[in-house]
Image (cartoon, rainbow, N blue to C red; front, side, top):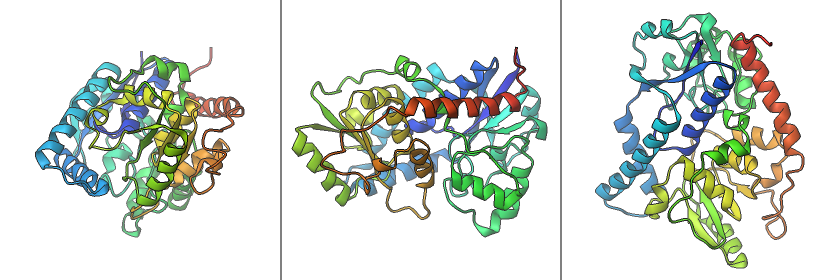
Length: 364
């Protein structure tokens, strides 16, 4: 059986990151390959410290550092347990910007994606995430994200060279396709995030009920950038008017909720009355599980990261689920998903056609 190495971000704290990694693995294995995620070492200590700092800063709540670190450590442990159970990872770890060519012979193909692997602010402009260690004919990019609408001028030449050496290119959002076109002159198809390649039934099969999930109806929130006061007021009005309990997945003050993993994330969304989020994958799983949701633009970012959400909502004709577009009195709990199965079928066929060609899958 031929073997595929997946290159993605290897953090153990973000729901979308873990679930997209699992989904890409499953999609590749459906095509008859053995898939394994290649671990890549970044500055993880600094990353965790920055995450803790940003959490405390965004929620405007002072918590002793040791308590925050304990809560974060418990969350990371749960995420690692999920990864151990569901994701095949290498026993070795590559270091960014080092000579990693030894790994080339271990796999028949390499697939980089689908998280923000090409975000210039996250990966120290690392050629490792452009598969520099592999032969060009083995390189495949499945729906990677730049996480920005433009690449800084001082790294455009590097990005152009690295991207041009990837034989099969695709991207996750419209802005990414424009970046590739501007840097290389190549046209890259915009493909859906791998989480959308798996069925609702498949996702529910790995879901898990959290021990503290409420019995009564609840409104779920998941904000990676904290909940700004104007958003909080809108959400509060919905809660009061409909007598709902509130569950905040991204709030470190709710310790038991914060310490839940990707499997619980799926179940929380599946059972909520309405989901309010600024997360791309929050919107994705709302669509997959056919739940009412409202998506807010994340505030306080240096560059817009909303392109991927715009692309997603536009593709599924759900632009009315943006907070600025929704009619708060009538549309909060009302959402028409009747057209979604057809769109999903089209997008899944498009994505699997790309993967089959890139992986040289012969139709029987």
